[in-house]
Image 1 (cartoon, rainbow, N blue to C red):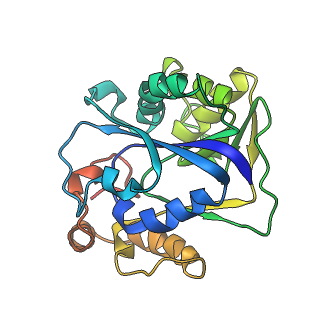
Image 2: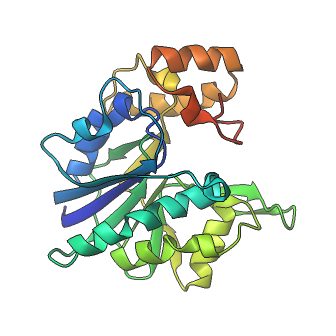
Amino acid sequence: MMNHIAVILRGHHRTWNLICDYTLSSYDKLAKQVDYYVVSWDIPYTGTKHITDTFEGRNLIKYYRIPIIENYYNSYYSSCWLPYNILPWKRLREKTVNYDAVIDSRPDIAVKVYQDRPIIKPEENCLYATKVELHENISTHKKDIALSDWFFISTSNVYNIMAQRFIFPDFAGTQITQRLYAEKEGINVCTIDYIDTFIARPNIFNLELNDNTFRDIGVKSREWVNLDREQRRQYAKAANVREEDYNTLSLHAAI
């Protein structure tokens, strides 16, 4: 277990209310003290309870909403522009604390910690992801190594560097360009084995989430891809999730 970490959640709230209890308990297993930061777009929120209420009893340092900037309202730029905008509060906090690690994730990402595996602090100049995939590079039209962009853990300094990648154009595809930017900055890209993650789609609304059912989230996520728009809308309604949170170019996610 680490001593003190920061967890920064960025993006639409989406299915957070469905997974927050389990995911927050997972973060609690990583460190003696966890500071939370949430940065989202400045849009109306219609969940069953406000996201800030879900952090009751935990140390929520800042909840911040920023105006939508059309050029940055997409998969690549939002994943760095939102983290960049929370940096002032993180730096202010770091005047009095030292973070062993900073986690960069999303509210719709369910997290499991394997307690039978060593929990190790990130090394300097390393960016850790939970999954690495092969995607088509949109410049070369060849398969290339891509980082799943929904969960990263690193030192505080590496987080700061990665949050500035909006200055680096997306020319290869979001998850490939993130890796290329890290390598350009001299950051080693690694995977981590004591944390696992899945995207939680609205069709998990009736799933009782625990360590034994965690992998069912991945199954449901794959099922979501094959649902038509009306089926996705019905699941979003059942889960009390805003359809607008899924206004995205990604066919895997969009409603």
